[in-house]
Length: 126
Image 1 (cartoon, rainbow, N blue to C red):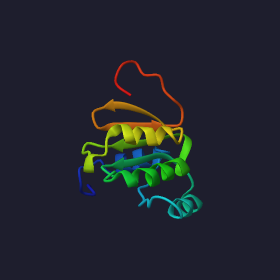
Image 2: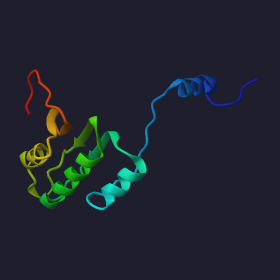
Image 3: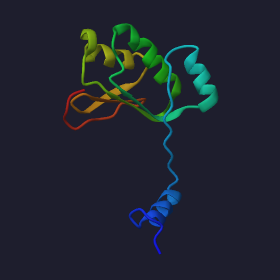
């Protein structure tokens, strides 16, 4: 007999239970005191994702202060920045990260990967 669906329900459940990785998506308010409260409740993160979150130059400091507070030592902050809202240039964003000892690689157009340790790149722009 069938339980419905595509017949792979049991296989999917076994695959899910065999996985030790988890993914949590939470709202993250930037700056103090929000980042300290978040840190106390959730701890530091392996990965922080942001997509089109920089609308003004004034938003860059609280964004990177928050990332610096919440990113694990081996973590990644992945920023998708396709639109340059209000003329905020990429160089300003990258310099704000560098000021907090976060280094940037750009694997493709509009994608910025920030990490604590500088990574040697073979080609591409920084």
